[in-house]
Amino acid sequence: MNIFFTIYTITWSVASVLALILLIREKDYCAILCRGYRRFLFVPWKVCTFLIAGTGMVIVAPYTGDPTWDYVDAGFMSLLTFLSAPWAVGTLYKVFAGKLSVKHGFIAFCAWMFSASWSYDLYLLIRDGRYPITWLPNILASSVLYISAGLLWNLDWQKDKGIILSFRDENWPAQSTGKVFAKIFWIALPFMVIASGAVLYCLMQNR
Image (cartoon, rainbow, N blue to C red; front, side):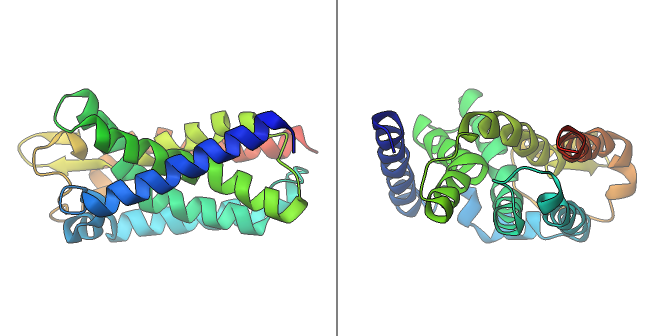
């Protein structure tokens, strides 16, 4: 591994450990560790769309022709995205809106990068014994999917407001009341199309 990748690996490793320490210290203020976030995330339509998307990613992984994409990284990256993307995207919005501190933004950014890139790099470094040459394209492609997932699973419908991005609400994260998927379907569809299109693009590029 050359000097650039050595420095890069050390940098993101230190950043990940620091983010984990800050997360533990700020556990009362980080929504991802709160019971409310679990109630917000583990609702039927979000779990079902994750299972469909995650299963699709895992199934097609060996057929893309990309040697860096297999059942393992497709599986754990999908799971990490589901668990963290709604929180990370919402947290970064609130940081830019001045409602959360830069410290929380750093934690969310590291969760994003670890889910979409650094875990992939680490897995392939262990599997292949070298840093993946696809590390940069993967950041770009996986980040598009990560943001799309974060926005998708933050969609909500409220009687007095209609369709909203729930992280804009003061009570975020809060569990939706009633069945909302039918009401948000047409807004959710583009985000699901983006994910499907990315997978199909990979398949067509490597036929």
